[in-house]
Length: 472
Image (cartoon, rainbow, N blue to C red; front, top):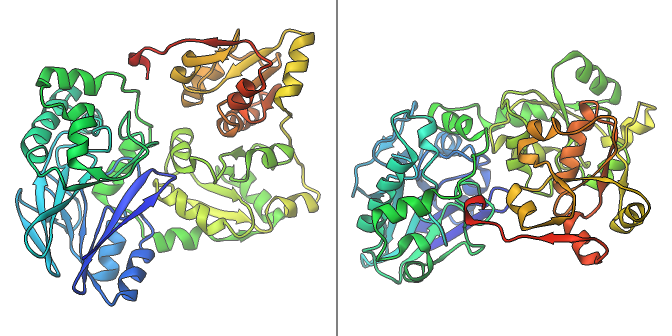
């Protein structure tokens, strides 16, 4: 028996490949399915089933393409109503894979179809739990997402279902079972996940706040729902793609990998409603970019920020990337449902510049330059971190203008004033600056390396504040 976690840091997502005696299953696959197919082929194994723990909100799963390419049926748990061919399993139903067995444990709460899969070895011993978004390491799935799609569900009602699922289906299992969740720290599907991506169930019973044996249902509901912030706007859109179906990743890649000369790129930008997305490093972007493009760096939390900043998943997109990374960017956009990349700038930004096209820039300073300016004059500082980060620590007199709520934040900015903009490390501030630059805000200056460098320099008056748990 072979169990492999395939973890994708950008989405903080874990897919799973399980193999036994020439047969395999894949649980919660990503959109690009070729790696799973190649893995099975290398091992002379056949993918027998594609298992889904629920209809995902934070990414578009690869279930349809993987099933089509391998012939493996798609399996969901009870209550699932997919609009494509799939097997909706009964609670307790078992699926044989080689010499091992996967048992369906229906665990509603995060969503009503949420299901865990209990892995039994050749001797029938319970060895692992693939817990989806029902149980994370250090946390449980947030109970406020399904209510966006089913009006008579409330987060309190879902939290109550989750309490029952955990107590009746998961906590009675043996302590030595390994828990394999669908997400880790950084995912918006929970609020307090550990950086660890696996653990024993016994240790989780000891350390996970949601599994306290003496907790009442009322206490559980209060703790699980306290401190939830609004989910990213693209979540319901991804859920619908996972329920209804979507275009093959092969067609998405074919359409997106359309190399455009600088002239053709400029014409496409002018003649369509396409957004120009530049995925280069923030500080490289700042030194020169195609006017009106926005920067979301591919080497940061790319997919979640695309989902947060681009409200329409059908938005046409033109790409400026590092040369050779075009397919990677198109794939990572498709992971969160942005399928309408219509081309990329051949030769990258250098080709644009060498063609004599118009170039824009964003001014930036390091923390030493900022400290020197502040010693001579009053400056306006915008801190674009989350409200909870700002309340924990911030530069005295800095205004909080969270990137998460950029339209509200934009309303507090005077176009005629100069602002110095920072986040935690320089990634989010460039997203903020580039979007506002495209909207006519020309007096924003980026602070390189963000609050981390500000604090380490010791040159700034930093206000300390213990953030209440309700704001986390």
